[in-house]
Image 1 (cartoon, rainbow, N blue to C red):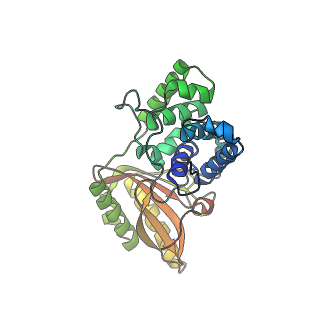
Image 2 (tube, rainbow, N blue to C red):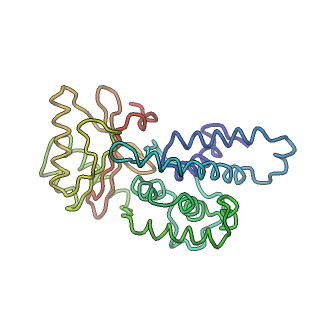
Image 3 (spheres, rainbow, N blue to C red):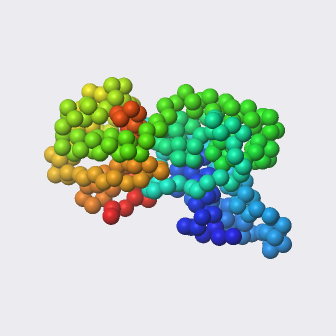
Length: 300
């Protein structure tokens, strides 16, 4: 098996870990920890494992389960709003198990890495999050999940059901690609030109903007709500940057499996934006500016 970075098996394991932890750095550490455990097996022990990727998935899941409790404690003391670390491109290929028991209830592979859903999953317990992701996204049976979390299959089924109810209560934006690109383009043009009226047209009346600046000065530490307040807040950031002689540009890139915006100033990535689009308008804005969450991003 090939678990080196860039291989399909590695990407599969990274996709599992990232969905559980919401941090690319922590997910990579979890995968590397699992690889070390694989390498420490004897040749005979490895030969007895019929499905190495499934075995590694269980190991990665247990590592993530152990990390989730301490991760929640760290985020509760975080300076300002915590948002997941954005990942360039797509995250993780297909299923490692069978099909979910009820596909109509399942969280899709792409949806499961949207910033909005990853943020919503922060309200879940570690067991709920693991059960939801492994069953609904990756198709593992509740018996397999029970082996990972140390509970009965019925208890794991209940964990996933409870998690699903919480997730359903959160906004789930599933605009088609063409509609989404139009909205993202209109949003980008309005912000870069400072056109307040154009920006108001592309924002939903109840739009919510959240920014993760890890305590940076001038970045709102609470959500900004409402089209007019959000528009003025965003254009204010643009104006301040220009007044400081640091105008920035935008470019379209795939952010967590869908079209997003990357903000660049002085040839450095200073922010990544994920937009929740519904009915042609932007309903949610996630702005990730924390420098340690932008390590995966480079200028082209």
